[in-house]
Structures are given as structure tokens and as C-alpha cells.
Image (cartoon, rainbow, N blue to C red; front, side, top):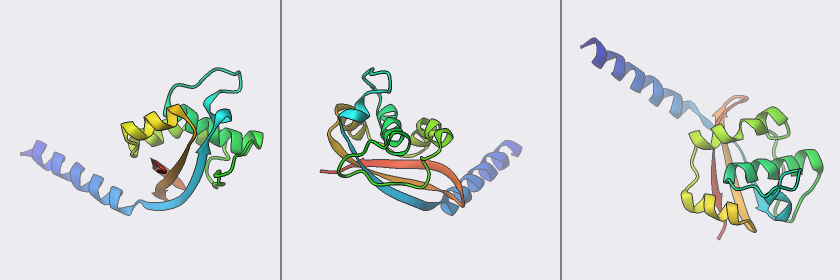
Length: 127
């Protein structure tokens, strides 16, 4: 009985936390040539790496393309480093990941959290 109560309590805490999270910010970005390679020239193979490189290009290196929009969160190197975990906690379909990995696609990123704390991001691609 105690185990059941503990499981139910954990479930209700999880539901309460997930409902309190809000959309903090949204931005769009075009994934182009510069975003597909790291600063050493190696081709990136994972979608989260490419999205992270896009934000580094935008914020750190000033490399932008038509379709790139700014955001107030990924200007921090620490926040960019957390990107992989944010994607894991959020949503990105396998098809979206594949299109990002191929490049030359417009993406849309929604950042969710509470206050200044970001918990997860959802990524979709344009048609």
C-alpha cells in the first residue's frame, strides 16, 4: 500500500510540475552550411549538435542566415551546453531530427520552463 501511495504521489507531483511550465520564448532558425560543421570543420551528425552549433554561430560568431532569429537564452555557453538534455526532455520527431541532420531547413524552437529556469525545448521544421 505504501508503494502505491508513493507512486501516486510522485505522479501527481509530476503532473503539477508539467502543468506549471510555460512557453518562455520561441525562435526560428535556418540550418545552413555553417551550422552543419563544428568550429574545427568536422561534419556534425546529430540534430542536437547542429542546433547547438546554429546558436553558437548566431550568438558567439555572428554568423547568420536569412531565417535566423535571436533568442534570449542560448547566448550563454552553459545554456547551449545543456541543449542536448533539453531536447531529450522535450519533443523532436525522428523525421525532424533527420531533416536537421540533412540541413537546409527552417526550424522552429519553443523553449519551456518556469521563470528563468528552462526545462525542455520542442523543435519542429518548416515545410
